Length: 397
Ligand code: AMP
Image (cartoon, rainbow, N blue to C red; front, top):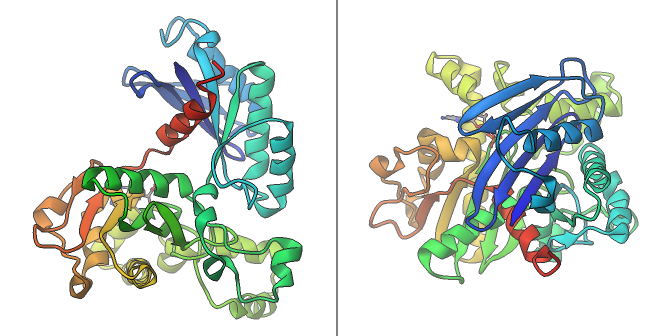
């Protein structure tokens, strides 16, 4: 049984085709610059990358090229689209409507459209992707897997902002949390490894976007992203949590429009804004190693913020059994993992430097005596989406 996973962004899309008999990846790829000059798609075949430059005016045309490539005899991937049993779509925002993945029908599409005002940059692209697949692969079931769903278990004391309560009832302003598919996947892996389902886990998804989640007995009880993915940690280009009064202060001082202010908070802040060097951690770490002070400062701010969340979430849960690092930085940077955990020995967190000297593979990196286990777990959101898609569609196909 083969499942196609689609993750549509505003001008790009990623895809994976998985054989769910053995959960093996058949192929993966991405399409870039949809609707922009220089568009192309890339498909991985047997370890080789094939990049094809072609005019891709919209997502529908882009997906048509992807589907054609999947059945192209020169790649030898599948012989017909009929082999694809279902399509799983990453959808950013499901608001309060979805606490788990769902088969997509007309009612769901209407609900997704209603969620668009909450995720104006993401949901429209997700909706276009679903519509394109419905058109190109009629009769094939589509499943929506939401970034927000896993966090629907949070209690009001975690998700209500201390604004006038009507802002929640009238405008749905509350904390939703994101990266849910990733936090769920890595926490379930740890529950498997440790053979327990009553664990108190803090998962740190550290990449260009970054968030921390407190998970008690498999349920998200708190998470660092909020109404939008802007809240919480310092990220590649996002500010994370700041004093909200700064916004009106700076809009006045710098004579900024709402869009310009949003642009500053989302695209010009974070690691990029403080370092002035790059939004990519590798560049900033290289600059810091050469003595660039603002790069060092950016990294120090980032690490301190992660530490704050980890420790405060242990307090929220009344204990801590495991910390998990995932995402591009969390999976690859031994130094960041070490420095984030440093100082938490008092609460039973002890990293083993030798075990920590690992990249991109599943590993336990805490010392033998560490009360709290620390793990690196590479995330696999696509596999999690494919598993949910299979679960919801296997009786239909
Ligand atoms: P993601 O958004 O999860 O793909 O993560 C991307 C981020 O991970 C980028 O900022 C990369 O610089 C960072 N990253 C990847 N590998 C490393 C590494 N070895 N050391 C530090 N940062 C890394």
